[in-house]
Image (cartoon, rainbow, N blue to C red):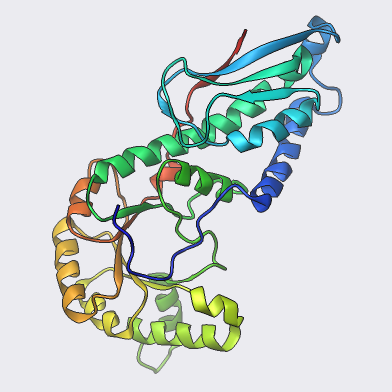
Length: 314
């Protein structure tokens, strides 16, 4: 696989203590919205308290599984006596009828946890599955597939983790992680520069680097990525000498992207190029063939359909 020549990369999400804590917050909301003040009336009325059983989480369709590290905690939130016996690991391919894992314990707890568990795994597995399709579509091209911040509020790190399970890469997680100068930043400065010349993209890159040097802790400065968005080839030529780490090429055609790669190679080959804007499975092959190093795809998270998983009694 092609490796970036840059020593800098956005933080890549793994399943760690921070992710566990974020899921715990969401899990408390999920339990409250399902059980409320009185619990599951149907299960309490029909299922004896002493009933024990086993149920399997089963794939109904093909896809990539994601979110399994959260299963034990999810089950424990409904009944700490529930046991999880995994049969798969995150990132593995599921076939229809694949057994993801088995839940054992009080039947009441299994029934109460069912929907929250399937919602979690279905959402994250759907993202991982769609991501894998984009990754496979670019084939042997050097371009890597990145996500965006177009995520479900509160679920961002979870959804970005799922992108990684599908073979994709994480773009910046939040505004606090990297500098990304977009057209609205330049437009906002231009609107205030009454009687002055608008700031050029190159000047914005210099200003951003200066601010980071003056205000960011030294440990953060070393890994800080400075990226800038351009929407014309002229802007690209203007900003390349300033040495941003990445230039985001917004809504450019494959022909324009190839031209951008040629100009980058001639002016400053150390800068990476990222294609973005309306990327689909139909358009991504031509985009990757243009020679850019990165392709960011908002659809990975904002348009993924949950993977169909079910719970079957054993």
